[in-house]
Image 1: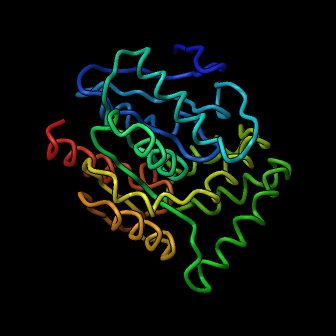
Image 2 (image 1 turned 60 degrees about the vertical axis):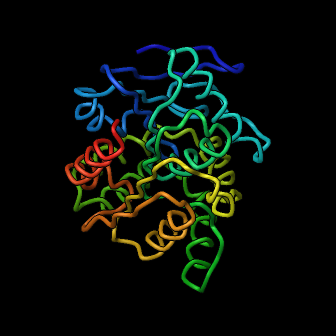
Amino acid sequence: MPTALLNGTEIFYLDEGKGNPIVFIHGLGATHEMFEPQVETFSKSHRVICPDIRGNGQSGKLTGPIRTVLDRQCDDIALLLDKLGIEKAVFAGTSYGGVFCFHFVLRYPERVKALVITDSFGDTQIVGITEALLMLSQYGALWSIYLPRSWLIPAVKHQYRHWPLAQKHLVRIVSHMRNHEHVLQRLAINAANHTRNLGQVHCPALGLVGNFTKVGVRYMQRAMDAIPNSKLEIVPNSFDPTNLCQREIYDRLVADFLKEIGW
């Protein structure tokens, strides 16, 4: 698979299939590999682009400052689209990738045909004790990634025991995370607040969220409610990442959305 030297760094990416392009953006600490099932599905009908964004996988190093992390990552992918001759694409982001896609569409609205946002959020504003506890747990968990992998992997296996496909990918993700860059990216998205600007998004948008976390559903509802031309689907028996926990449902909903927008 190819790499491109862009914006002072090297970006590794997958480019499969022909047709209207879809760009899949992976979750925190993950790589293009978390969309292997979607590449299999959608490369039959579309051109599928799956980059490892800066600081992840086989792409170049990510450094501070935190406030510019998303800017630099989005600029990298805009330049990658230029290199690949793609003027506009559907952007599909899961978890961290959803925050990335919100940032990208606000920074480069002319490059986005539509959005598919999964298990993500537009902001981390605390509304109530449950969200406050979640935010505290996220900051506390930041430092757990420095624990030995032999400690983390059993916990991941247990958490995803009901979803074998997701379990396999999450174990791989935890095994290969780039610790310092993982922390930088977590701090970057925790500081982001896109919800207040999402009313400026005029492309169609589909939100997908697993029903296993009520706070996650609330975060997604708040973000998608801010986008004028959007809809939200709550996926049963699913957890982040829904594209792996409920692959068939995710693929069907995305395929239906693509047909709906004529892409």
